[in-house]
Length: 198
Image (cartoon, rainbow, N blue to C red; front, side, top):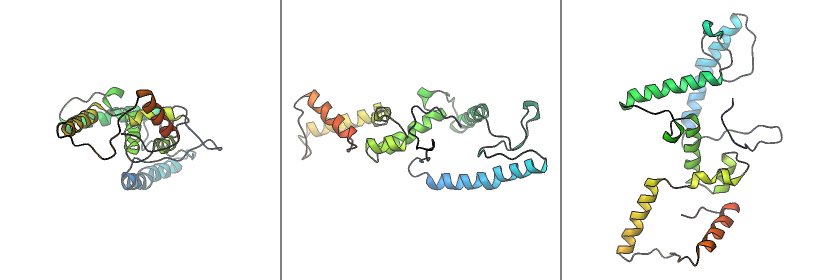
């Protein structure tokens, strides 16, 4: 299924493994098991009983929708996914008790979930590993996940202000000789797969 990836790094057979957001593996495993046993399996069995041909697609319609020409077990479509995602956002509105905007900038699109995963990995591993996990061809596509958001910048600025007031500097505090030197050092570290400077 098309997921809006840009320049995905694929293997020689033109496929790639899926990496999960850190600490969600059990949830994903149990959800996948439920889907296979309780959704896809019964839908495909009913499809066979009705004489419809089998297919290799993983994601399927759980029931027939005659007015749309969809038979039980038909491959799930991108438009159906988008409609389902919109309904899920509607349920989220009910849960949180306020309007939820479905927009990339609001972090509520399917692609935003990918960004959430990239940001989670960027806090736990090198930028080169993030590039590999996200299947980016270019490391430049991965750098977005190392960018700090406004809240993170505010917290760091407050911590630095407190240290400055108390003249409390860490042992490895470095004074920059020049902006150009720091940018070169950071780029060399990032492109060599070194740890991300904070």
